[in-house]
Length: 295
Image (cartoon, rainbow, N blue to C red; front, side, top):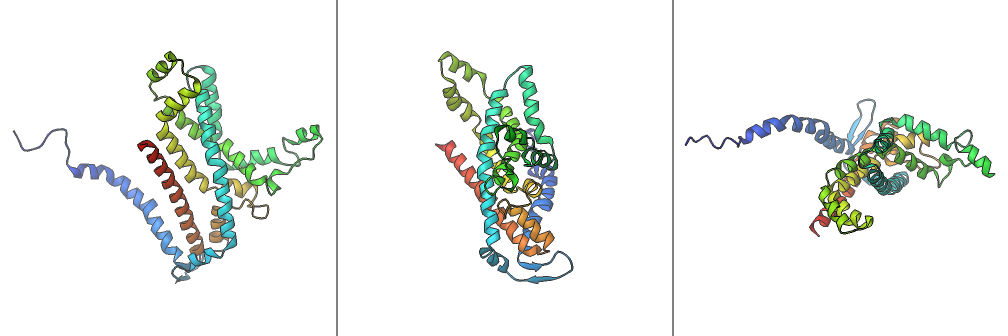
């Protein structure tokens, strides 16, 4: 026999050749900016001009005494707590409701997914009109009930839930689509066997459906954690961070510090803190998911 090896095997260099474009793009657009951002965070770095002064970890030390930074951290965590579990549960419920064949379910799938294609500007404009206390769509309802119209976006306690509501309406389409794809991969034989055993719907959901789509469930939660930690457009356009910084998020503070105050070094330090938050919560969720698989 010839020493050329089996036909089904390829040299390792071939695999690296195909992976090289991905690694190059990943390094240029993700790895390099990450390390560059960390390097900038070690400087007093102004956006305009050429002023660059190495100050070590002084920016990170300033974060500990920055009350507005910790306020934005709390606001962001509150928003994540409002949206991630609710978005995941709502998307799963919608996917279960519209999964299957039929014209009505196909129409509903399109309707529920349609909101996710809108831009953040359109979404915030629509919900600002709905929640407005002057000429909002809810004003006739308040008048009919004899209640003074509520200015949701200016209310200290209702502003953040209002932004969360708009975000749920906007973003539920993608996780719903992921759940629909996962539900389509569940073997029908399992449902047929459960039907023969006269299993209840709750038993089928708990013992068949959820275990079968647990990896997609984990993916949705991680994607939602990463996405919702980066909340910016909704808060910026609907409340501008008000009232009294009740809805100012960490990304808003980073944006204002870097592009309004020109303190790019300090903004980069906050961006590194945001990265660590997202990384920590994502790894925790992945660890919990893996621990659930091993149980």
